[in-house]
Length: 512
Image 1 (tube, rainbow, N blue to C red):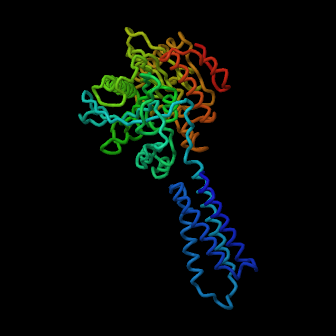
Image 2: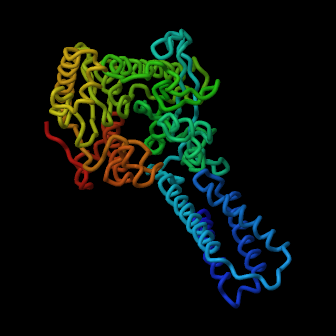
Image 3: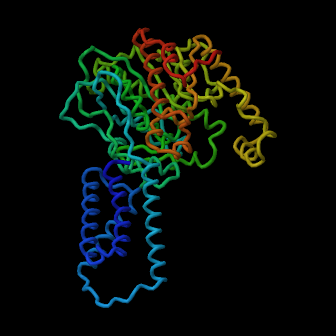
């Protein structure tokens, strides 16, 4: 919790204790008005400071109501004339009052828990020497539509968030998380089934990026990296990694894949993935292949746009500043699978990193694969191929029925299983040539995003962050990502992958 909101909850609880004590204390009984007024004033002052400095958030609504009731009660007590010869309280009235106080204490305790499991996160600072600039681009692909998702032939729209090494400007404010849009922050997690109002506080988090900064002048051009998010995630949830890469001299184009993210903020408003009928059921089996190809298609479109920005065909500050001869791609989950796909199908990609993505059997044998790095956890199918789609008879009855419903038949299930195993073998063979499969012990699927900072314990475990600290998992991921791209996009070798393995007990190179 933040400092003032913690003070507010502590003062709320202290006020309850004081009022109970004042009821029975001979010294304070005659000064009840002063006690009520002083307590209410202190609560109100701290609440106003909290609102002015930190901002309101829904997790503390019980505390807000408590302060309002306190102020109203203090006004009533102050205006009420004292009664002489007051009759002693009946026992039943005292019991009800005690129960009421206990209930309020429980509510305030619940508020403290809610504020802790849904904190206002502090993101790790970039480790490089450059200031980080950021720019949002709204792109329309006139050659593709959204018919797969909505049945509409409207042109496909994308938001792209470009991070870049910049000239520092102390006068410019840092950009708040989630584009400073409460609606976007709430919409993203409401798509996950949670009340969006409890996530609007994410806009109080400060990033380390600034808009409207000049591109750094240390070099005439900078290598470029595409970043592709996971299915159901958001480009905003990879801010830490993208800022870190930009601070080390990379221009990062993070692609917001419309209808494949939790929610996107387009010029026409918020678009959520639930608006697509394709998600009414399971995404297996064919849909998952289609999603990979659409994700890769988005990336190809963005590469084409970057070429236009670099040539000056599209006006921007990046004219002749993008080194597209040193082009990399990194993606998480579905985005990681797309990064692998492009590494073996698009010769413009010089290096690719897959963050815990599952391989699919979609390749072009005529294209030599670019160097590929896989960073994952113990449960990834490449690490444990025996876990791939177990036999239907080995599954619980309900889950087996769900699989049959998703695939249509047992034959289709087995066919997809075989195809997936072939994809894993193909991917493993590529990784074996360079021994670039790395495992972060104790991590889970969401550890490769900012979710470990957005969610407190134990909620982070429900979202698959893992037992290793979120900061450690991301620190390892950033170190490996930077060293790999430095080697293949900048030609540097001083920061080797082996050295990083030696620095972290949680990190292991997997021999293939």
